[in-house]
Image (cartoon, rainbow, N blue to C red; front, side, top):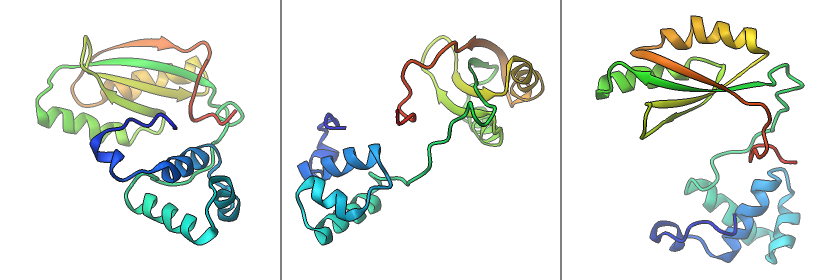
Length: 162
C-alpha cells in the first residue's frame, strides 16, 4: 500500500501518515487505535481523526472478517468467461443486476476483450459448479455463451491475510 498511485486525486489528500494508516489497517483492521497511533508516530486523538477522515472520504470502505472458504466447504474456484448476446446499456444493466443476486458469484468484472465479463465463482465442488453454471449463470439475462477455467491453486490472494 506504500505504492498507492500518486494521482492528482489522492496525492492531494494523502500524506505519509495517511498512507501508513491505510497500510497497517489493510493488514490488521482490528488493531487498537492506540497501537495504530504508536505505529505511525502520532498520539491517539489525531490518529483517530485521520482514520475517520479516511473513512468519510471513502479510502476505507469498511472492516470485515476474512473467512476461510475451504473450511466453509467452498474451496472450488472457477473463472467463467461470459459473452452476451446484447451489449447495449439496458442489457448490461440487466446482467449486472442479475449477477448481484447469485451468491456463488464472488466477483464480476466487465472486460474489454474477446468476451464481456469474467466471473469468479466459488462452490463446494465441480458438481455444485456445474449446477450453478447450468441452472443459474446460463440463464442470466443476455448470456450467449460461457467458457470455464478451473483454478487449481490460489498462488496469491490479497483477501488472504497469510
